[in-house]
Length: 402
Image (cartoon, rainbow, N blue to C red; front, side, top):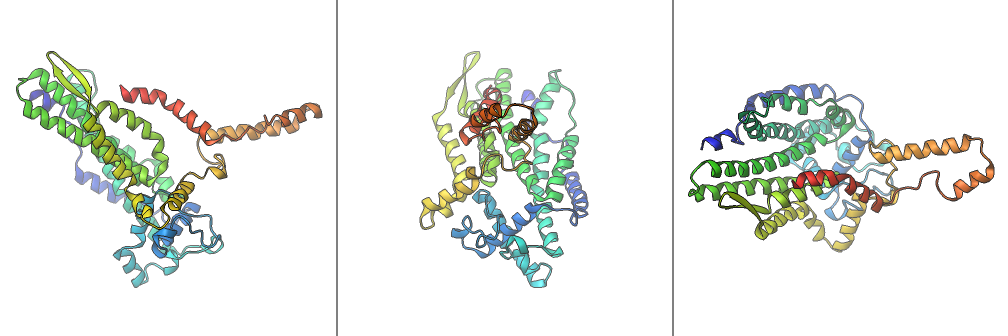
């Protein structure tokens, strides 16, 4: 019991009331940013509100307002249902009825005539501010889940005292996140909160297993009922973490790149169960845990796709959704501002093309270089990008497995 107390994963040094007060204070600051600059992402989300409010489900991923807008729905279905929830609820209807929100804000408009009113701007900005509840929840749970790790390190003399409240503040006051969500306009804070919640559940599950092992080594081994309870608890938290991450991928497919890390971590730490053998622990693969993990993940990930599968011509709908989520046809480097290695690749290609035009070389050599398609650099295909991503993830995958 003493050993279990030393690594109690549910110990919290953060007051929930203080977190709530911080949310209110920061929300007030974010309200001051309502009239600031906004990007075209604001128009994107406004159009998604209109799509999910006025069109039947079967048209969500097909509509482009008669070809007059590029702001088509290109997020996974669960995020589409999130937009549907924002545009179809009694609060939105009440705002429309009272005139505090104009009908035009939720209408399908072409790109050349979609200037929002001040009421529309306030409404959409408010949805982002309120969605940050999930960010604060994740920011609160993350250091709480790590409390047992810090406590165990301190008790073992190999760690320094943590400051969980500083961790919360660093997350919720991140200036880049505030600018991206509350100026540029996005919902990344909400999504980051779901990711932190998922990680917190995973950490809790791992700590419960560690606590069980510690208790087994320091107490009477005959207490098998307590061991079974702790083992089931650890498995439950890991399933919750997997489910939360699957929900996150069903909201924004950008997080798909983290899926290999979750896969190998859960495969090793959830599906392999420690069994006591005299003075050591032997790990054996649990097929039952693997099946349950797969079922939970698939339900959370694919559940939002079910309404589209139930439409007429489900294959057509799924192909259209995948085409919107992965628009490889428009090129992988079409967004020059995207902060990734392919943006640097494209910049280098442009610079090489400029130097080739200005360089004092013979026309024959210049034509030969151009004929080999060396400059500008060839555009990377999806398989090459996926391969490079997996190669880059290998060190992280190895660490997750260990």
